[in-house]
Length: 537
Image 1: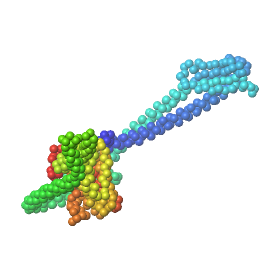
Image 2 (image 1 turned 45 degrees about the vertical axis):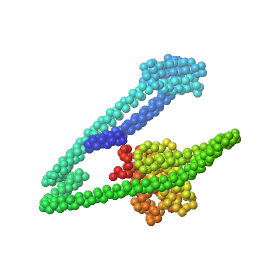
Image 3 (image 1 turned 135 degrees about the horizontal axis):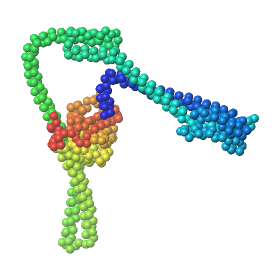
Image 4 (image 1 turned 60 degrees about the vertical axis):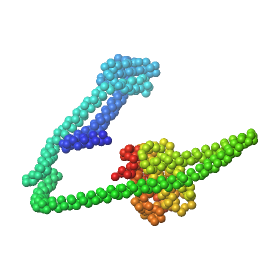
């Protein structure tokens, strides 16, 4: 992003002249940078080919002119004959050996001491009368070849730089005459138009694009002049109407202020009613939960009462036998066994009741006060599921949870519990109605600083014609049959306005419904607020 901004700032500062200069420089320099090395490579290849041909020719000459001296074993004549070839400044060394004994015949390497190289050598057989009598080895140095290539490189680079410089100079001269100067003139004319100076005409006697641009500016000047004239007339008319408009504006302003105050009062009433409806719905759900908890407590507490009364009767009988001195060891053993079994039953029933009361206590505190705190999502939903079990046990439907242990939220567990309860009740009343079995499934997954809660059921689904209205207040398909139409509306308001999340629903007929709730791990708003629903504006 920084690099992109840097490029944008550079582009915004490049003038037209600089852009053209850069285009010329790159247009000439890039082809030169490509063609000069290619041309130099071609020259080097040609020079090496010529050098190789000369090497072959010289070694062939030596093999011919040295055949007679070698046959006559006269090294002096051989040295004189080889001077014809050795006079070439490229020749570094000439070596001649006799065959088949391979003895050195002559050797000239004076030039090689002053040469740098690299060196290339070629060997030819020396024949006399069809018989091979020796070998000649000719070594050439590439000093002159490399110097020639360096000279060509300097010449071509100098030519390219000079061509680039002359091209830029001539192009700038042409641009200054045909482009930059007319553009500056048109810029001055545009500034004059922007300042409102519309009397002097704009002329540029050219038939190219700049001439057409000057003509367009002249047309624009004439149109602006006509428009300004019409505006002057309109301004006069507006001044005439301004007196009456001011009084009308004041009157309309007063009316709008009155209407605005009425609307604000109505909005306040609606918000108050909505908050009260949410509180009533929450209390109604809590009341229903109280009835379910009471029903659940009845069985374990009844069992505890029965066991306690039995244990009391056994204790009285034991005391009577003690007073009558009729107690036996078997009686004590039977009483101890009965007391131990009774204690186990009492402890089990009381633990079940205490666990249920503990769950209900936390849920009741959360839903009655809507306090904000840090809580584990899995524990909170498990507590709610345990309390909803009493009502779900009367139906053929089951509720399954699949929540990771490590999801922690700093939010409003009571309001989240109300959302969860509303979704369960909505599935039982609407989605799974009339079915012999059904499964509700709630999963959650952590996504960075958010958590995605997915609640699904395998019921009859939501018809396509009403799926976009299910979050509207008082909309229900059970109107007059106990449905208030507030459950999903309150759910939507809690999620979006208080918990700071989003809710999305998808459904297909006879394939169930799917609610996706995305909540931040840290809810927005004031952490010290007692009831965010009642303070939400």
